[in-house]
Structure formats: C-alpha cells, structure tokens
Length: 245
Image (tube, rainbow, N blue to C red; front, side, top):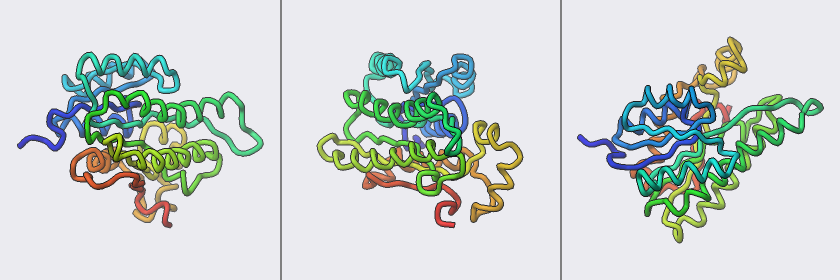
C-alpha cells in the first residue's frame, strides 16, 4: 500500500539529528521525498546517507536569510513545490537571570524566532495548495525550566506566530500547526543534562520517562498528513502530560 505521504515533497530544517532526523525517517517511510537542512556539513552528509536516496541535504543556517534562499532555490529546481514544511531547527544557548550574555540571547532569538519566521515566509511561493506547515515548539513555552528562560520565551513566540498565520489559512490555502514536545531523548538534551535527564523525567513527567524522537515523529506525521485536514492553528503537546502536571 502507498504511504500517506506518497509523492509528497517535504522540507525539514534541522534534520540531522533528534526529532528532525526521526521525522525525516518517518516521512520517507510514508513515501515522501525529503529535503533536510543542517549547519554542519559532516553531520548533514551522515544524516542523508542514513536516510537514503529519498533524501536531499542542503547546508543551511536558518538564521541566515541567504542560506534559506539557497535552500528554496534548490527545492524549486529539483522538486518544484513543497507539500509539507517542518520548521524544526532550534538551539539552546541560555542562562538564568543575571548570567545572560548578549551574544547567546541574540543567537537564541535569531535561530528560534527569526529562523522559523523566514523559513515559512520564504517558502510561501513554493507551497502547494493545502500544504501543511508544522512548527516545532516546546513544552517550555508554557512550563519553562530554570535557566531556559530565553529559550522558553522564544518557543512561546512561535505559538503566537502560528496563531496569527492560521488566520491566513483560507486565503493562502495552507494549514499551519505547532507541535510542542516534552522532554525527549535527543542528543542535545542528553548532552546538556546527562544522566539527570532520566531522573528529571521520572520525577516530573506523568508517564515517568523521556519521549523517544520516533514518538514525536509520529505526532508530526499526523499533522503533516491528510488525517489532520481540518486542523489549523492548533498546538499539540506531545509531552507525556508534562505541561499539565
């Protein structure tokens, strides 16, 4: 049987590890052709090799607008349109009040807010009718962790952007939603938290564990596919109950 994304073209920013890579694998498994981006050339090449011939890698930093122009020129040339856009690229470079560095604040806002905004805006000419736009948020948008206040604020900003964009769904003929994972077993989280990550999840997540990136990818597939054809402007918390605990 053909997959639910058969012959669809998807673009996933930040697709070289964690949730982005898991989502790319899942989309390809459902028949999509996927363009993935990453800032590190070696990691990008490794990811594309693992994803197989249905994947195309484009080195791009979403905070650099000319990189986004290069990405979409490549998509236009090789695929002609976009059916699914996943604005996933993000960064954590944060501190507690009193310890913020201007460079880290600028970097966080550039990648996590400016990046998704222009990722979406610059994709508009390529979006197919009834395209699905998926922005990756975070449970931190409503339940911020200590020392992640700028990161949390950046993810809250995405919720507001998606709410506004959804109001344009009718005239622009797309759907746009935000997927907000809870604590997830990604390289970034494990690098930052180490063994404390599992203990934190056991203590704070009602399901008692970290999410696996593949579980978040399943939620992304729902929002990308026609199964969510009447869903726009929604925020789906795939968080094991974390934001309600």
